[in-house]
Image 1 (cartoon, helix red, strand yellow):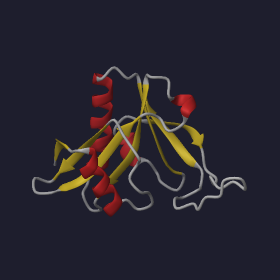
Image 2 (image 1 turned 60 degrees about the vertical axis):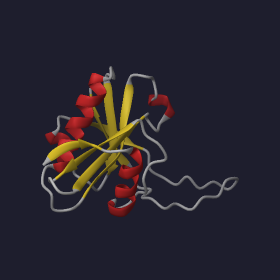
Image 3 (image 1 turned 180 degrees about the vertical axis):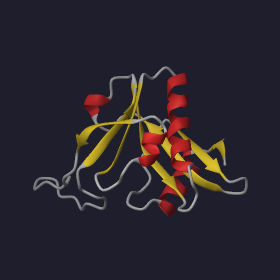
Image 4 (image 1 turned 90 degrees about the vertical axis):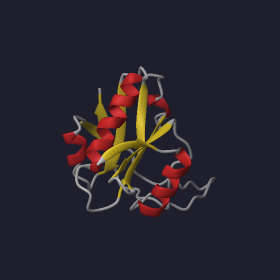
Length: 145
């Protein structure tokens, strides 16, 4: 497995095709890919924190990470590469969220720590109706300080 650059446009197409429960994010600062030598088998997009209170200029967020099932260590390879990249850019912290039902083995393998629960719930409001197309369960917040 090898790390390789990928455009945001290509990463979004990959995520829309393979992610289990989310569409590609609206935007990102950059994306990273892992290939098996022939084809891309995983991508990560990294951007500003979605939670505005965490957007302090020193924190970045892995907004999506998506792999093709069956390829070992790809997720932890992407999480590690994301940390190295943002650290080289001057960021002090990298965060990401996973579903409460997920274990986080790849994050732990890449040196991230679970720091608590976050989010969950619907974005639907009576004055602004929305249809939830993503899981609304509580999330686990991980960071790499």
